[in-house]
Length: 130
Length: 130
DNA sequence: ACAAAAGATACTAATATGGTATCATTATCT
DNA sequence: AGATAATGATACCATATTAGTATCTTTTGT
Ligand code: FES
Ligand code: FES
Image (cartoon, rainbow over all chains, first blue to last red):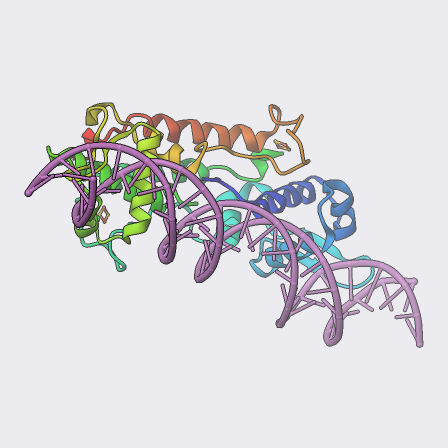
């Protein structure tokens, strides 16, 4: 039960770095800073661009910068990009949606725990990490 | 980010069923009740026996029963059996243990969330599910 | 034109999870 | 004692997810 995966982790680190550095940041710079495989982090940054977290500039002097201020980037959103819908607690009972789900004591408990975790995750911004 | 996996889920269901039924319960009965692949649930029950959650009896009339009362079986322990150490939030920064871990803002936040979830999980017993 | 950047996309590798198969052991019943 | 009904142990296979690579295209500044 990992809260965040490697993807997300690197993404967050990259975003934090970019947030701190006022200038535009290249992949090369991030590779040096984070010591992460170049093609891997490239893919991550591309995804962040597609999802409109970062803005990208091609060509010489190009690179990435934030599209919104760090105080408005929530890590839950980054998690969603790389991990899909966060905190879902599936029922394995029957193939389809379990008809029992609302009465099921286990789900009820788990749901509470998840809601709680979600609530906390939703409050963390990049700004609060740097 | 699944809170519990299929293994754990089936284990919990099995334990709940066994807890409700006063008699000794066979794999066959569980298969019928839960509609889960027989060899799969066998393995699960064997593990539960090894970890001393269930007690097992071989031979005719054999099967499984609880080793402790349902109020003393915590689901966090079942999770640990099937999912290993629950709620660990790894740092991916450098290969080894990150020297920065205690100062790292992200880890600090995640740790809080995890501690919270753990605290809640630790309170759920089988008794509270049946 | 050329070089330095990112974009797009498809592929491979490693790990974790989910599931099977097979044979050995033990206990009960007749 | 032997047959049968149960679990124990163990090794294997399948699938999904995560992690990582490779290659080629596009854009832009000089
Ligand atoms: S049995 Fe389906 S949610 Fe619990
Ligand atoms: S950088 Fe290692 S814990 Fe945050």
